[in-house]
Image (tube, one colour):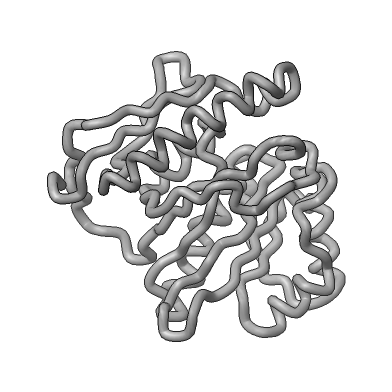
Length: 236
């Protein structure tokens, strides 16, 4: 991405903008992500977060979020996707600023814990923290990225006002490794990918049940794959 022409994020208000959001989503998740332009228009019109990201006149990302229970002051970021490197980070920080302007205290979203680059971005770059492991959260998914595999997810929370001095993470009590490239493995060896899911699911569920908190994500020197670190909350 050319530093001289930054990604710009714009709110979506109408059907034309909603169709652009759908087009971006369908580009990233071939087969779509189960949301149509009509629903996007309704969400935008009712005051939720719907944006398109542009770079040099091309749509390079989209974001969609909606509010949680009344009085909870939480935005649930359902979809953030980018077709260009760096655009996703721009959308997330735009989302945070948008929430700050509206007095929203935190943002939540789910992600696939076996996708290493997303784990690194969410935990180590943004500083979001896992709060729950969700087994087969979305049920059967038909897009080309997720089809044929259990849709386990981790729920994250991200404070809108970041702590000025984040506490140092405690020494890990548990490490859960994930594969170098689960998406490639799903294409080449779906049975092995499913085995990774079931094996790590058991460990994640046990960790959360034991009161452990995910304190970070570490990557090897080559930058592929990685591992989650866990420790008890009281040791923070």
